[in-house]
Length: 100
Image (cartoon, rainbow, N blue to C red):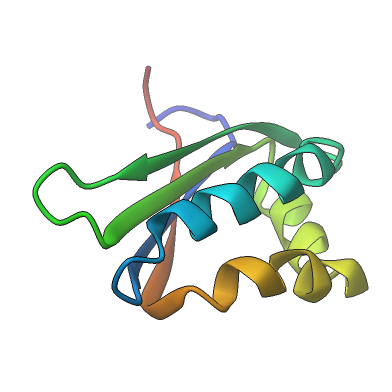
């Protein structure tokens, strides 16, 4: 295993039917704020080809501490409210970056 402390966060969500465009627009509005967070490296928003109401949002962070500081920030809840309004169900997982 690599000594890298980078992590990738994977959020898999099931949207309310037909909310994909609104979810993507909401993500685009908050993306620039997320990109300014300490330790943020990159993110991607992906839509399932076979299940259009299923999406994943991945983000990479320099360390677990950087990600934790971001989600504990008071503004985090406000920034993601417009996205959460589209979500029926979701699960977030964190993975250590082992190899590239």
